[in-house]
Image 1 (tube, one colour):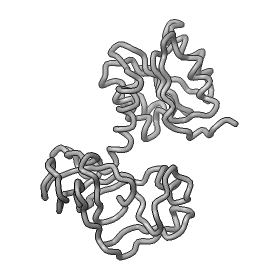
Image 2 (cartoon, one colour; image 1 turned 60 degrees about the horizontal axis):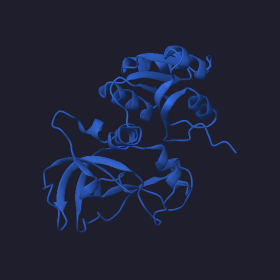
Image 3 (cartoon, one colour; image 1 turned 45 degrees about the horizontal axis):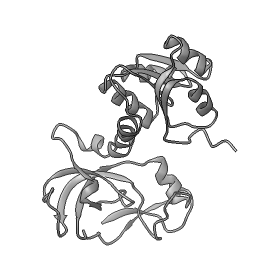
Length: 245
């Protein structure tokens, strides 16, 4: 099979497609004929050798994938060859074939095309786990989403609306905020030109947001923290804006 291979730590743009042996599913795993996959920021960090885990060299990056099951390892009960699936991987998604744990594999609805399924798990699952299980967002509460026009931010906007929340989208330009509006944001704040804390407090009548979803970090974290109401929850899920020293 063909796969994008990393043989030394460095820039992800230097990787090349190579012919390699196809993986085999172990116990509790499925082998997927990959139809679509995605490149995440974490893939670039992993290839650079700066991710929280380091796969043994050489390896194929790729944290998520979608395709058709072609084989199942011992003990697999939820899937069979021919099933349409998407999966979260430790690595290996940027290849024609990929192995995934059954527990991290999910059915793709017939109405969902593979190009959407291949980019679905990391962003949507991350946002859902954070907002629903960690943030404990309830219908009628206010959700503040920073970086609301990014890949993860947009999923947070959609999930917040689906859960019945009032969503305030924060981004650094009018163009980005327009995209967030299209996805369902009720209110917006341009934190490149407006004071984030003051704007959120004004929009909530001084009450503050109930939950903040923050994939940005950096200086915005402090402003978002000040924009929370009593008992508010802040979800720090990324550091695109850097880490304050």
